[in-house]
Length: 202
Image (cartoon, rainbow, N blue to C red; front, side, top):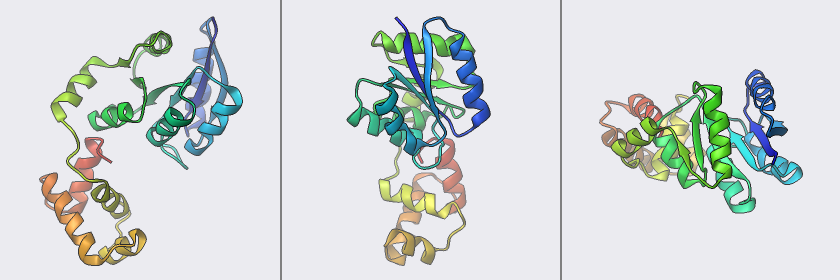
């Protein structure tokens, strides 16, 4: 049986290399590759892959959000997150979004091929060390709004600019920032952002 694959990664060089690598496997066929997260669902509907390999950080829609849309709209397509970022928070969010595999890009090529075959058999495939780290890290303490505020703060936006962008009052934004700083044990908003980023909470 030939396993039909879709690749989604915003770096063309990575997409091309992965496609060439996977096409070497006798039972794989790369039927489509896209560079944006918001192109994934349309491509899956058009090409009907068995497995979608999704990067996390892509324009338009990140891989975790794309995985959630696929789980709802194309449940026959199995999703494997393939990312540079082996962070515990990302793994938890990927599983919650409906992904059945999580592979870091520095894994050996045979590990990726093995992961694809195993998810086709109905298994979940996660790096054991990352799974252990995820359990140890626990769930993100940040609320959805606290994540939103930190993400907007990423650009160096002022409290007033964050409030305008998220349609919140400035006092509410200050409260969310204070809560996020406390929950991450940070000293300021940029440190809170760095810590939350490193843990995959954003």
